Length: 365
Image (tube, rainbow, N blue to C red; front, top):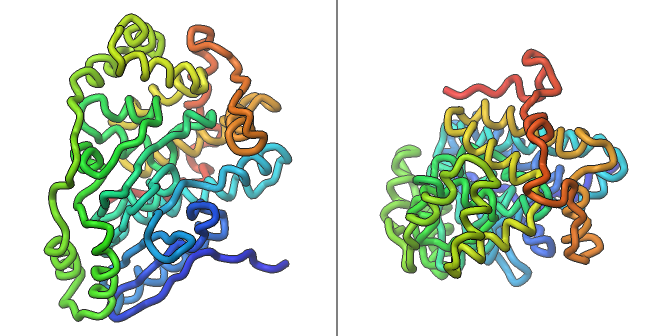
């Protein structure tokens, strides 16, 4: 059986391991083969003392940078989830293991988060020691739009946003730009998009004493503040601190402001079931380390496809958005008010005993 194309280019130049995502026709959406190749490259460089740091970037149809990564390959998820393809299980287990490897990587891992950075793209960048955004960055975790939840460690990194920003981003899937990414603890540094190539080449060509020197060099070339407005989070904190999804939607619909009405309209389009799941996910994850959160998310994603055979919110959500493109998902239950508590709570019951969990080997320092 032939190996599918990789769509990543991994090379060592000088003392740096350099990774370029090369699937521009799909905005670098991650396939199982890409996950495997990323993991293999990072393992090799982790154990190579001559590699001091790793940098990762995306590409677009005209060249490098442009877009980082739009997420996982949702068409694959739909096809695999519809046909019982066992590679669906492999994809999530191996993707989450990759996310954990990045979070726990012992060397500097520098992510150039240009353009679209969503879903799985956040999973391979949020664990970076330096998360660099540009004026073109469009960042989001929009999984509730397709009947999924912000996975790839989303519970961990969204719950570390200030106040209730994590609940807001997770439930609505709203997109933020560079300044807010930095203000919300989702990015560390700003670099104008036009300066990325020069930084990349400098990393590849210069000599460094150690990994710390690499990080210091990058920090000297980037900025600690990004241009652009950062919204007040007072309303976000007030509404999204409420105890239930119903309380949140009631508060928004009772508020005549343009923001509240827009948020309410957005939530009414999301999977009602997954909104309940996601609110619980973010709140549980605040007390978890990365490994524990990823194990919880692996339980949750198993249930997204198999809890109710033939009734996967995720398969239906991807169908409506990316396959049939009718933008009319038939959510079940159809309304936020109709989701029974026992249904969403079932997502947090692991289908595996702890000793046999697919991610049992993950450990945080």
